[in-house]
Image 1 (cartoon, rainbow, N blue to C red):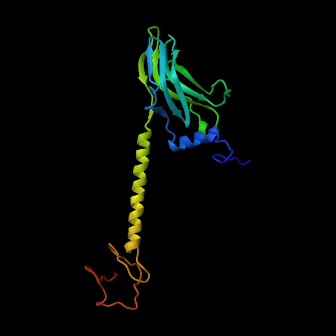
Image 2: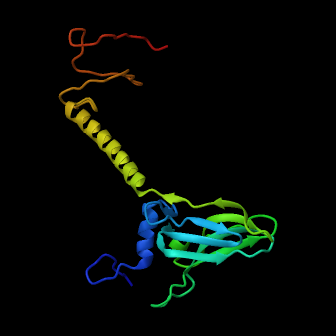
Image 3: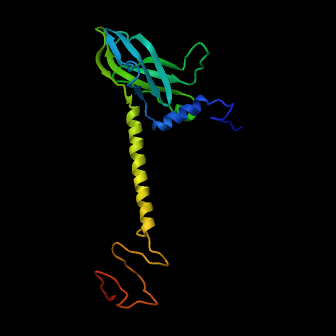
Length: 223
């Protein structure tokens, strides 16, 4: 069944909106650095605090409206603090369960993240890393901020630069067509910049030394 999005009396479905945003951002994830406090992560002993902010993960926006604190534990482990999107869960009108903070742990090294293609499949799990650290009886150590940032101003600037570059190229091509330098007319003539090499015989009904205009013309016999 064909469905409509961005049509009158039709809903703009969230999977299509996520596809649009993710395509626009070329698959990049990141925190918005100009919204609230950028989801900055701090810690004290074994307690982590995620400050207010917003993040876009695979075309889906999540917001920390105030702040959230979670306990990292005191076991000896290599840890990653992530935002996990799980599209296999079902939200309700009163509860958002498809996105949550989670600490994933490894015994001897930092664990690999689960990052399935939730844009294409509209299902599965995708984990975005906010920070990594180690835990032990003395609390959190070796803390590293792993946030990436989406600079929308730079994105628009880059789009504008590319647009103007393409526009200039098109304008130059159009100018060459108008003055005839981009081609030789079948009737009316034209000018060649550079060497003209003819592989087979050259034939003309009207060519002689009087109607040849050239700064450098030579006649070399083929061997």
